Length: 215
Image 1: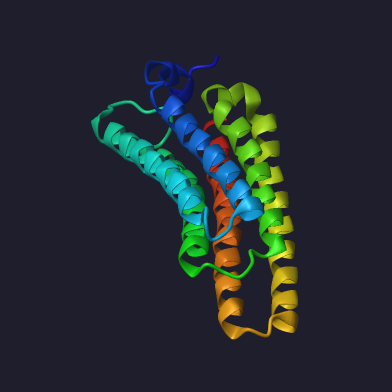
Image 2 (image 1 turned 90 degrees about the horizontal axis):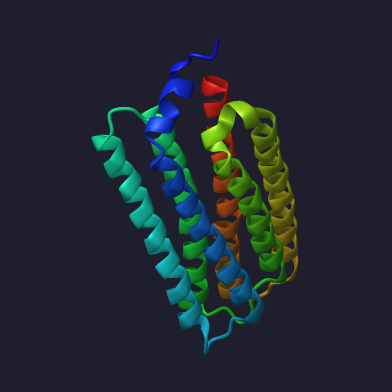
């Protein structure tokens, strides 16, 4: 007989699921803007791209704060308050790192954006696809446990690819970049993008914890 706490009470408080999905939509928008930025960015349009990405980051913050407010005022939650809080925070971290990278491009005005930046941003977009699939099925977790677990595994695979891209970038940077100022600029930009992929994998780890507890 299916009579667990989760299965009985999840339908009564569905408000968290659309809020979490809203943060994922923000990540998608920010990552797509970031891809445009690294492909088409220059000194003339850098501020515009940064402002657009910053606006998405603010939307994500607002949604996260809404979730935190709801946690304080909701008696019954779909799963542990701590898990919801961690998931919302980690989702928001992905956008924060994208925004941080965009800010550095705008402020540092590098002579060129590293070619590897596009590879990392594409991996962020790939990760976002998996995050979206996983979050979309959180409200039916008992039925979608295997699929959601696979999405989380894919996030781990993507993060490993991002590590490889970043490591090869660093090797090339220190071998070929003779301008020490430009070296620092490029390294910091790429570091923030790599951290975004780390945060995306972190989302998967939190969701796997939820699966263990409730599915």
